[in-house]
Image 1 (cartoon, rainbow, N blue to C red):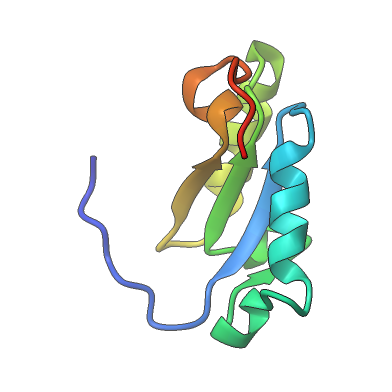
Image 2 (tube, rainbow, N blue to C red):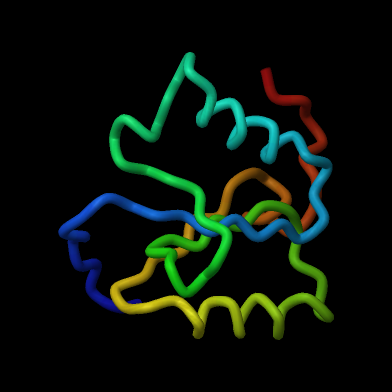
Length: 100
């Protein structure tokens, strides 16, 4: 694992979904609403990985999507980071306990 370098500007995020149940996607969209408004901190969703600093991944990643996700990661400029959201992405299976 490489050394984490600080970002010197606002974070632009590209979201890639691996086929999740959309619970995490709803939470991500909720963070963009005026109630939480993460854009006031400079965090912004972008439509292209070439403009992104962070790759935000939701859902368990199937084998056929792994190479596409790797290609998306390679298109991102340095420095870059990856954030995995939810139990599907971190464990590879949906949670058996509902989150509250």
